[in-house]
Image (tube, rainbow, N blue to C red):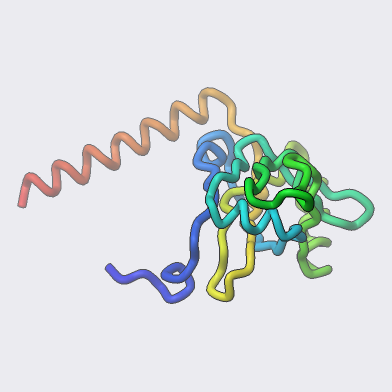
Length: 158
């Protein structure tokens, strides 16, 4: 199985695996991020956490809030604030679609993946999701376990 060209050259920085467990993801949007120099260096080291972060729309601008990018140890005087708000770059049409979807009952903007694209530019994948209840989480686990068991049975049968 060969990966597509787009996925082949991406370097994954951070992945929010719990997001798909805790939310029903309906739509995904790729956004750019406004970063400082020391933040990019720290991201290349791969020690970024997006687990507690979320995106928010304020004054027709999209912001990433509570994303932890640790200080770069070799940047002595020009270091950044670790949990500062970072502006996300999206097209106006996509921003209006986000505003419309977020206005619906219980919808949240969740960061799913943070990565460098083919050109070496930091991008973040934002998902529009609705929170799951415990019953839904158990149902997801049952489906996943059944699919694993089904693939084992088919493999052993051949």
